[in-house]
Structures are given as C-alpha cells and as structure tokens.
Length: 457
Image (cartoon, rainbow, N blue to C red; front, side):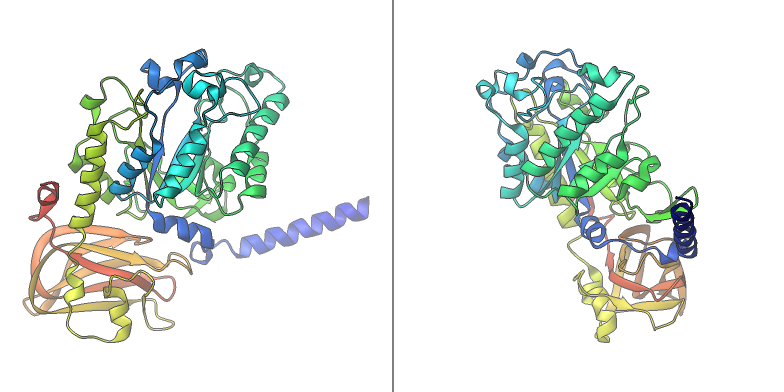
C-alpha cells in the first residue's frame, strides 16, 4: 500500500509539473469542437413551459400539469423565424427551475405526459429537435439542476435527487441526437451541492463533442463560460484563455440576453417589452463583434407560437446584419500577393500569415481610389491559440500612417468602430503577438450613414 501511495504521489507530482510547465496563456489551444462552436457565433435559447401560462419568470413547482396546453403548438414556425434571424442553433429549455419536464420522462409524472396537451402523448423536446434540424439548425438542451417541485431536492442526503437528475440527463442525451450545446445552470442551489463531475461524466459518455456552457466558477466542468451579465454585451478585453486558481483553460465567452427586456418567458405584455432593432444589433456587435458567442432568448406564447411581433423583429435582425456586412470594401482591393488576398477574400477557410518567427507584422489593403471607412472586422485564426496581444488599424493620410484604432485582443472576431476616414490605403498593424500571427479575415466597411434604417425598409 505504501508503494502504491508513493507511486500515486510521484505521478501526481509529475502531472503537476507538466501542467505547471504548460501554464502560459499563449500555449493554451482550443479543442476542435470549441472552434467549430465559436464559428456558429449566434444561438437562440427557448423558454417555454408552465410559466408561459402563468405570467411568471421563475415557477415555484406548484403549478399543475393541467396548466400546460398550447393549442397551436408549431415549432416549425419558431425555427423558420429563428433561421431568418441569422442564428445557427437553438437550445431548448427542457426543464426550468419549476421542475416541469417538456418531454415524457420516465422519472416523474410532473411532465407533459400529465398535461392535456396532445392527450399527454406529446414531446416538446423531440418536436423542437426535429424542427430545428429540418430547418438546418443545430440543437442543444438546458436541464436545470435546481428543481423546486421534486421533494428529494430539499433532502439533506442529496443522493436520491442526484440519481433522479442523472436519469433525466441520460434520457435527454441518448434520445434526441447530437447536441450542439448543453447549458449547465448553477442558479438557485439553495444549499444543494450539485455533483458536477458526475453530470459532465454522464454527458460525455453519450455526447463527447457537445459544448458545455456554465458559469465561470465552474470552468473546470465546462467548455464555454458566462459573460457575467444578461445584457448581451462583453464590456472587457476578451481573452479566450481564463485563469482560475492558477490553472489556465480555453473557455470562450457566451453572452446571453433575452429578446424582450427582462423577460425570458412570454408574458401578456410582451408587445411592450420587445427590444428595438438598434438595441439588438448593438448587442450582437458588442458580443459576436467582441469575440464572443451571442445567445438570444426567444419565448413562444401560450398558443405555442412565436408572437408575430417577435417573428418580424427576428427577420429584421437577420436582414439588417446581412445587409450591414454585405459590402466589404476590402474585397475591392488592388491586386496583391496570395498571402494577403487570403485575409481579404471573404473566405474564412483561408488566412494570412505573418512572417515565420515574427512577433509583429502589418497587413495592408490598397484601393484604386479613396474609400470612406468607419468600421473594421478582423478575425484571428485561433487553431494555435489567441496570439495577437496588441494591434492598431491605420489609414494613410497626408503622407503618413494615422491610427484610427489602437486596442488589445482580437480573438474570434473583433468589430471596431471609428470616425469615418477617407483613404486609399489601410493597414492592420500587429504591434505585439505571442507567436506567428494569422488573420482569417480583415474586412472594411462604411456603415454609419448606410445604417440600420436602410436594411429595415
């Protein structure tokens, strides 16, 4: 036994030494599935359940299943509206904190099978998964660990509730196909210590490539982290690698925010809470355009439909974003070498490379005649990690390079806005990098006059 203990200690020390030697921000690289997820950029999380019928955000678990009865349930209508917004995947809230399950689980009677909807034979989760994939969208699941209905949750011995939750999770991860994202919420534990290692172990057994989203405090159990607010903004420098207690991990940011002000579920006053188009575009540009993932909340009404005002706003959003970033002036550049063209061609599968071994470099765009620009969109190639530490965007004016942007951290995508400048030469000046910089896209736009009004007409 002593020898085994000694071997275990030696192994632990070696592992610790190896981990310590790798604890450099620039050395941490993303997993392939993280890169694939980051390229999706925009998802929609759907809240629907007994709260929808009771004008509530957080149910207390006392609502009768008879409450749930959407007469015109149509997830295909939801998905067509979501697709029009530009989103690439959806996350369905299969069980919120009230404990009511939107699939016919075998673990409890507190589910759709005890409701009058479809005579208890319906499956919201299954129908949404099918509609999502039929419309070319990925599908994911939110399963709240907090359960305000099940009495086992409040017991001092958490064993029985933990088994119950694991059984629910196993049903969801084995019956509804590949999951794009699993939303792991730590809200409202009430003293219950969740068995996060076991939750993720179960998930990984059946869904090894699913991206697990969780609060930053749970970073060791997740693949992506919460931004910290529900504003839909990333208000700080966005580095994909995060440090927790001396351990570094690649944990990209997801910024979640509802389509309606302060409302994740539908309410009778939803027409008054719908956010403006300008507000939503601003949120997208300060989340996706700040290197993060944007998770927008949508909520079907008590009929089982997305309200027409929501459908219209989602279409306006998609149309605006497509129009707003459709005229990439950098694609009208003068002839240049293939390496530079790779960053200007609108193809995210190609990239420009700085000289090998360099820690600074410039990428220049030349136009045949002066162009007015006020926005730049830059994407870093992240396969080898987030390496660009400081950069400037500069315009040629009066015989010299004039900085219009000076900032840190590019990451997956960085949208920079600056006062309009008229110039025939623009360059991305990588001032400092931790390794050989690579740029997937360097795009230039004139947006402030074209604005959102044009796309909304």
